[in-house]
Amino acid sequence: MSWDFLLLLLALFALLAFVVQLLRFLRADGDLTLLWAEWQGRRPEWELTDMVVWVTGASSGIGEELAYQLSKLGVSLVLSARRVQELERVKRRCLENGNLKGKDILVLPLDLTDISSHEVATKTVLQEFGKIDILVNNGGRSQRSLCVETSLDVYKELIKLNYLGTVSLTMCVLPHMIERKQGKIVTVNSFTGIVSVPLSSGYCASKHALRGFFNSLRAELFEYPGIVVSNIFPGPVQSNIVKNALTNDVTQSVGSDPDQPNKMATSRCARLMLVSMANDLKEVWIGEQPFLLVAYLWQYMPTWGMWLMNILGKKIIKNFKGGLGTFSYANTWRTKHD
Ligand SMILES: NC(=O)c1ccc[n+]([C@@H]2O[C@H](COP(=O)([O-])OP(=O)(O)OC[C@H]3O[C@@H](n4cnc5c(N)ncnc54)[C@H](O)[C@@H]3O)[C@@H](O)[C@H]2O)c1
Image (cartoon, rainbow, N blue to C red; front, side, top):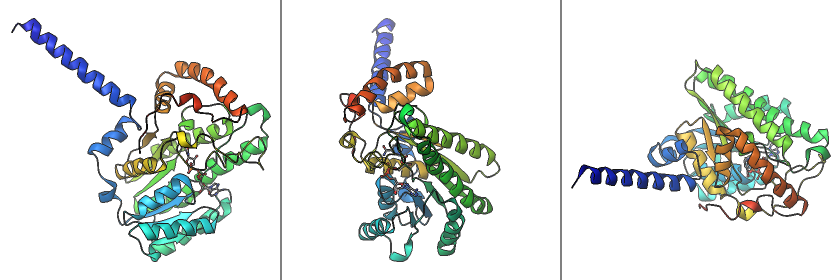
C-alpha cells in the first residue's frame, strides 16, 4: 500500500468524523459543554441529594416540572409562586411521585414584585430548613406586543418582575450563602437574553439585564469559589409562558399559545437544568434546532444574526397578527427530543 493511499484513507476518515460531529451538533438540544456534562459529567442523582432547593415560579411550567424531578432526588424543597392552591397541587404530586415526606416540602407563597416581602420569606426558609443550598430564580412573565403599540406600564411590570424581583430575592439569600461560603444561584434566563426578537422588547430587555447582573455578580464573588452563579438560557419550552404573556396593555394577557406542541418538552429542559446544577455550569443554553443555531449565530456572528432576524421578524410579526404561532416558520427544521 502506498503512502499516498494511506494519507487519502486518513483524510477520508477525518472528513467522516467531522461530518458525524457536525450532524450531532445540528441535532443538539443544548450547548456542547452541557451535553458533555450530561454524557460524562456528575449525575444529579449523586450530587443534589440532601440539598435545600428554593424554586420560584413553581406553580407552573418549567418550575413545576423541576419540582417533580427534584422531589425524586431526595432534596428538601421550597415551592414559591403567588397561588397557594396551585403550589399545594404541585406539593401533592411531588409527594405522590417523589421520595419526599410532607415535612420536606415547604409551600411558601411569594410575589416577586412585592419586594418588601422577600426578606421575611428568606427568614422563613432558613427557620424551616436551616440553610439554602440552591436558589432557582425561575418565576417570570413574557410579552407579545409591538414596541410602538405598548404602554410603558408593560415595560415597568416586566422589569419589576423579571429583573428587580429576581435581583431582590437573590440579594436576600446571598448573605446566607456568603456566610456558608457555598451555594448555587441558578437563574432561568432565556434565549431572548442573548438574541433580541420582535414582539418581546420588554421581555428581552429584562432578560438581557439579568444576564448582565449575574455575570457581574459572579465576577464580584471571586473570593467565594463555593458560590456558583449559573445562568440558564432556554429556547422555547412547553409551559404557560405565552398564555400568560403581557400584551400591549398591562392588564391583559395573551390567553392562548398555538406554538405549544412545537416546543421542547418541559421534562427535557428540567433534566438538563439538573445536569447544569450537578456540574456547576455557569452559562447553559438549552433549546432545540433551529433556535440553538440562531443563538450561536447571534452570539458569534451578530451581523449575520441581525440580518437573519430581520428576515424572520417579518414572518413572526405577520404570524402573530394573523393569530398563528410565532414560530411556525421553524417547524420544517426542528429536532425532536423527549
Ligand atoms: N417556556 C419557555 O419557552 C421559556 C423560554 C425561555 C425562558 N423561560 C423562562 O422560564 C421561566 C419559567 O417560565 P415558564 O416557561 O415555566 O412559564 P409559566 O408561565 O408556566 O411559569 C411561570 C411561573 O412564574 C410565576 N410567576 C409569574 N409572576 C409571578 C410573580 N409576580 N411572583 C411570583 N411568581 C410569579 C408563575 O406563577 C409561574 O409559576 C421564566 O423565567 C421564563 O422567562 C421560559
